Length: 227
Ligand code: CA
Image (cartoon, rainbow, N blue to C red):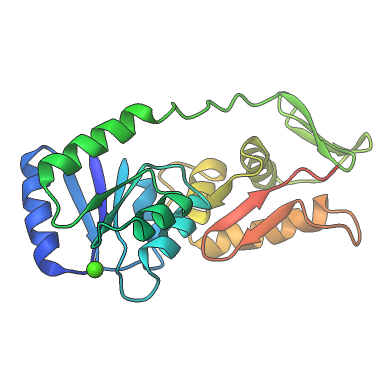
């Protein structure tokens, strides 16, 4: 079980890391939200998030995580009054623990939140799917057509479009797209993804229409079906 602990107080970090490790957790720590937050969240099973952080506070970080992930989030709050806790739950946290934190209580809350979590929906790609504005994806023939006319996409551009449209509405990071559309152990440059997305947009988006592929700053790209 991997935990991502976002906490700026070194004493709390040291105490919690030790006791959580003793309870069998692997703890990844960040003192505040940084640019690699999505990757670190993706590697974790749950996030323990302090409210009082330098820079973006815990509520803002929680909302940021919620834009791309449904990972369980437990907030650490310094106060026992209701303001923090309600705000935390509104920001999308699953639970909260009041400081000073008892590792046993935290352990119980983590387990409870993980039990409540519904299993992630399995994506079953539709082999023949219409994805909007006349675009049609035929996975079996590895062909993409607009109004019945085949579009001239490279194999990489097709795989990229399949990966994005299979996860329609969901933000995929450049690293996830490298894995899905290039290959597993390819240590690619994320600019490769940016360039391929640009080319793909030029080929699949209609003139003057909104793009099927939305840039989500700081995170990656999201496919949206356009009616
Ligand atoms: Ca703090």
